[in-house]
Structure formats: C-alpha cells, structure tokens
Amino acid sequence: MDNSRLAYLSDLIKSHNHNLVKTFHKVELPNKDICKYIWQHDNDGYTIYNSNTACFIDKNSGFIYKLSNAYADNDFEKHCTLYDIRHKFGYRIEIPKHAEVIVMNNKKYLYTVVLRPNSQIGLDYHIDIACGKVNTDYFIEFVDTAVPLLHGLFEIGRRFNSGLPEVFILPTKRLHDDIGYFFFDFKRWKHPKNKYIVDNIDNLIYMMNYCNKNAGTSIDVEQVTHYIKKSWIIE
Image (tube, rainbow, N blue to C red):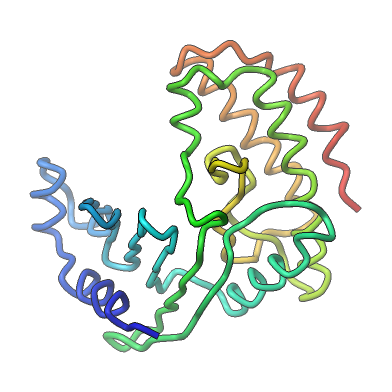
C-alpha cells in the first residue's frame, strides 16, 4: 500500500502546535485549546487535523485516509463486520479498506483507509439545510432510513458483546451521493446498548429544536418525536 498519505498525516500531527492554531483561527486561544482543528483544501481534496487526529478526504476518488489516537480496540473490525452484513438489513455505509496501528511519539495511532460508496465523498446535512430540504418530512425520512442501520449496529453489539458507537446516528452522520444517502463514522463502541436509542432520540430532538431556532426551519418536533418512538423499537 502507498504510505505517502500516512507520512503526510503523521507530519501534520507532529507539526501541530498552539501558534499554528492561533494563526489559523486569527484569535488568541488558551493553551487548552491546542486540540482545535486546522483545515485546508486543494485540487485533490480536503485536510483536517489537530494534535491527535489528521484526515485527508480525496475528492477525486472518494477515499478517506485517517490517522488518530482517539480510537478503541476492535473499532475497525466492527466496522468491517457492519459492512459485511449490510445486505441483511439494507443500509449503505463507508467501505472499510485498510487498518493498521502506528506508534508515533510513544503513542498508538490507528491508520485507516475507507472508501465512500459510489466513490463520491458525498454532500452533507448543511447542504440539505441550504437547499431548503430540512423539514418535518425530511426528519421522518431520516428516521426510516436509520432503522436498518440501527438493526445492524445492535447485531454488531451482540456479536462482539460490546456497546454501540459513541457517535450517534444523526443527519450530520450521513451523506448524499448520486445513488442516495449513506452513513459514516463508526467508532468507540462503548455506549450502553440499553441507553442508545433514548440518548439518540434526545440528540435528534435537540437538533430539530436547534434548526427551528437557528436555521429558519419549521420542523414539527412533536410529530417527529412520536414517529421515532414508534419506529425505533430495536430488539
């Protein structure tokens, strides 16, 4: 495998410092904010990094290269298994391609390579907001789309006797390509299974209220919440 991307990401993490962050954000930041991200883009794609994680998104191929010490054991194996059972439940997610543990600065980092389905990086939730798509029906559709994935996540939790991803299933964690929506970013499978649905619903309610207050949407939060509680009954 070509290690040029790994070398590039390693150098970014090693070079990250407070002065770079302060210059990039053009504000004075306390030292505790050393983990603030810096991002950049060119003809090949987008880079985002801080002192713990660096990621390159290749906009031409749909490959995502990531180096991070914010991971848990078996994260990538669970992602692979989640991908393997996708047809059983009927969801679309990133395609896992490669993973290896790297030791750098006496810390362990996980280097991963994934491919976005249809080889497109996808358009995110904020594009949906800008295009005026986010309303009550949008969230109802999201609830339906998430059901197959939730079944898959719970299946992985049973197989590995583990929790579920700490990153919840939200509109901000799915993207849209020429075929349709797909989900991404499955990591740190530590969230208690018995709280996952309730906590996920709470996050969705917060998101809907935030959109209504700050993005000019008119989402019927009560209607969507009622629909979620009927639909997200996962055994």
